[in-house]
Image 1 (cartoon, rainbow over the protein chains, first blue to last red):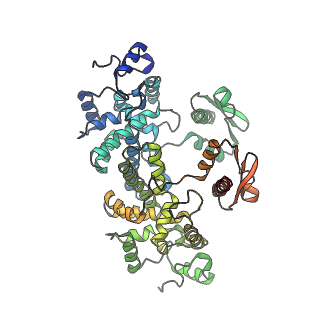
Image 2: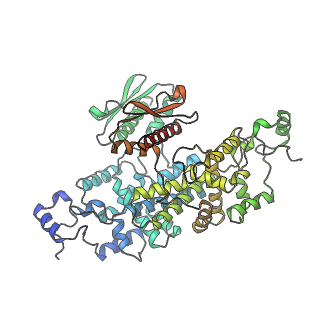
Image 3: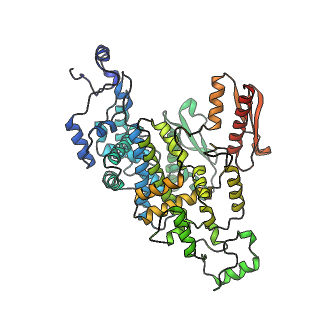
Length: 276
Length: 276
């Protein structure tokens, strides 16, 4: 069988005639395999050579890649496993690095190093997203937007960015694949992740969430603060009122939470500017 | 210095004169050490011999044990670490046992095996709670109540019981102590936990949450269901209305969620009884 002409194109770019022909030819769940060159490139980016190369393919295959067929094996099980081992090794690292730190800040530090944004960053900084196998219509555009916005926040945006979840998933699934392939060796997982995630977020670089910072600031300076989110359903906008006056606002269509965080940041910037 | 007369008694049982004398004698944060016999007993219960015996003491010391002094080292950091490694090894076990299972049920199975109730069960089944070092006034009574109620639910109550969090914490902290002591050997952690948690909850024994079960049941049988929680603040009671009629209710003072789960269970029992 000839290899499909647009194997990695997004579903809506694919000619419908080809889709129909292909649907007749291919078994349910057929997807083109990854070439050995691609597998080697991913191994090189990760700094890990797989015994079982099929795990690389599995870790990079999104459910949409099977479109228009019945989905076969995807990265989701490996993502589940990778999430667990990553949390473990990063918890240990933070525990050892900060020998006296209490569980509250330990948990915040760990979370910042394995959250959606940090892992999505890891994916695009190392170019792992180029090897993602998907046909989700808007994903490539979302990834491009995310990469552009990243440059504004060199360490972490603390809730101002909205990274495509797939980017985070795929780092977790690759880590899960390494954990499997290494016969569940967490030291190997840690070695790989440490390089990928460098520099890890430390107590010094751990930022504050804009909403917490806003509330702390207003409490200290005895201002009344209110975040108005009720109108978001209608106008996709969240506003921040300080002592009844609108000081910050943000519009974001996809998630109310991101609009809220950006409105809080806008208010903080305005307050700091006003106070010199 | 003589050993304090009621070293492990709860704070409100302690004669106030002794508390004052002791406060003058002891350095801030002083607590009586665990005896070698007690440490050996805990090691025997866990099936693990510690190189660093101080970890056993730390893993079993609740912040209240320092009362009335400034708190010193407690189990909280070890609990943070133990939670992470436990989630990892149980995730792996479930992943390997169910080679085709999707992430949703994998996550539910993992959660059931490391949640507050399962770990609190582990603590009392093995008698680890006898070695807990605390002075929290009501804790011993809560533990006794929990042990009594446990017998009604041989595997898991799925949200009907309200286990004292300390019992779960102390299993996590002991696991964290073993992880530390074994130079972060997750295989040793798994061996110990597997024995303690036996039998693990499997797909076959994984129960349904009463609220989910109630909603599923009513959807299937085309009944309208409403859980009325608004009155809980006043009368500590949650009611379940099926097609407008009160079918189940439960009163629980400590947590609204437990009252809700028990009300849902009562409604399900009633529905099943009515339908034969």
